[in-house]
Amino acid sequence: MNEVNFEKRKTIEQVEESTELAPKFDQDGLIPVVTTDFSSGEVLMQGYMNEEALKKTISLGEAVYYSRSRQTLWHKGKTSGLVQTIKEIRIDDDQDSIWLRVDVVGGASCHVGYRSCFYRSISIKDKNFKKIKLKFEEKEKVFDPKDVYGNSPNPTKL
Image (cartoon, rainbow, N blue to C red; front, top):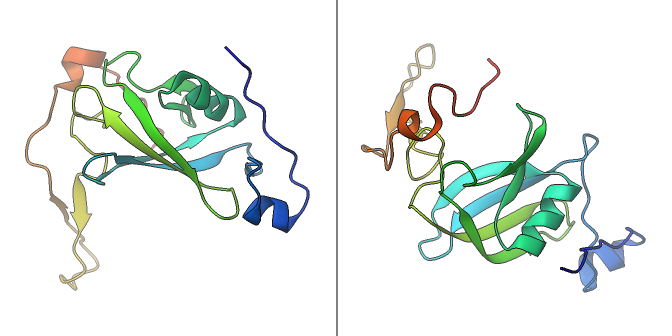
């Protein structure tokens, strides 16, 4: 397998108008990633990649993220089987944000069991801002996370 290499960022013209891949990672070495379903366009999740994760994603053809809570690479679906197969990778004009268009084996991308990590909405019509209630937009889980991950699927820092 050939090693993936990125170009050094030299000029605005190179970053915005050339065919050279020169991603800009933030001060923590991360780049944000929005992941959508290739067929429907549905937003599945938002995550981050470091340089190694982006290189592995490109070379494997499967999504690999960087988990900020666990401080490690996270090959999506390696544990659950819910692999995100890359259909297309896009990078924005500044090359500081990634958009993955994927097919999801198993039909879910959320470790909580829903299809999308964006399974709840925030009402902007209810003006009781002291007690905002989230609305569940997805009613049923695709899988039971306890069956897949046991008791701790994705430790979240509160």
